[in-house]
Length: 164
Image (cartoon, rainbow, N blue to C red; front, side, top):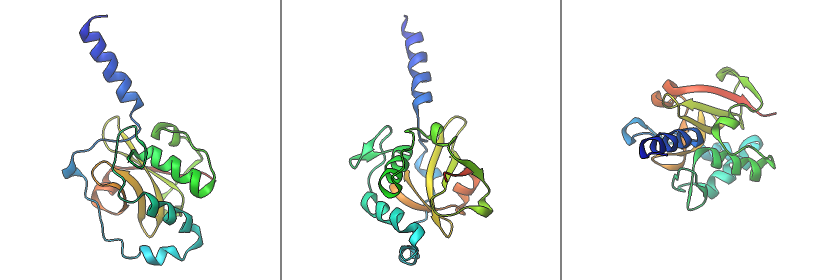
């Protein structure tokens, strides 16, 4: 196999395996004002998710990562559901985007998955908490909480899915 063919094959494989997006820093407008997080802790439906968030908060993003030293968005969702809900989810954003059933943003509730088309082929996933907040592994901020109504996230929103 010549060098050019090897480069093309490598690019195709990496593009296919990419579970999360890789966005330039300036495109991400993360809202760090989550003062109502304390209020959410009292809601039973979100308590286990918040507990998991607190364990992972600030963990750096790492493409393909699955551990506290670095994690990507789909692995974060997979780990949180395993720990908080005792559910086994697939590893990639692509596979996770086919689970459950599609719901509208008007009907979204805690624990639903939110998906974003961040580029032509890249997808991103997070877990909806409540009050327009979702947690995810951001390429620029690591594990964080953002707002669905943030102009950036609203502009790239793709779908929401309910698992049960």
